[in-house]
Image (cartoon, rainbow, N blue to C red; front, side, top):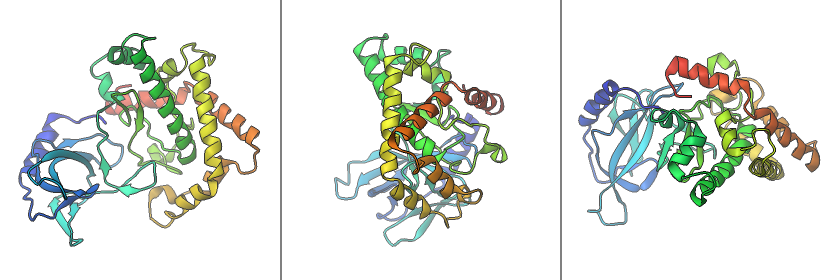
Length: 324
């Protein structure tokens, strides 16, 4: 995610200084085994989002059953709404400051406060320090093309991209600008911020991002060195997407039931259209395995460097300053 300017950081840090941690039983909502012993008051970092502004805060914590003198930092991201809260052992809500802890809809369909992805940078942050694309950044970080470290990172990127391609096809997360794509220190792709999913999209639901998943030009440079969908790495990526999609179809009833559990949650993604019916359609229960495989191959081809993907990145760059 793109960090906002230092003025906002200073404001949040002043607010954090006002917070007093009371009691020994306060724990992180993301990790009940971590007891809070303090807040790093200079750690408040507002993050850019299309919805409410998230803020990352670092706490000093100890293991509940471990050495109480072994204090370590652990970060959480909270969504700014009304009041920030943290639960204690008596299941009470303890006010922290004039904002509220929010729940984020994650790819594995849990409602939790979002943990910080360790050892990672957003693609937007990468763009602030280099003019090159992913292909050049991977060479800077992992060595020359063909070296074991570079090819291992490319493999990690390929595998993680295939997994997110299948998940994105099914759950339709939008607002996939470069502030919402992270890369860890092994080259893996990590999507974050699922504020627009299923039947919702930015801009009053204009659905400008009409590829089923993001495969920007710079992503295809890593996945397909040939540039014409003829390389071994591209074939492997497509093969993994097909295998993942076919595997998901075998569990379609469980997937649909899991999403159906949330139908009365009041989340915006269930407030319009036919989210369950459209999810079922994307799983295509009427297709044979061969037909479903060909369907997934077509979706990979359609997503490849699609102009609406590049256009959305350009819009976010012009409007929000998010590096493309």
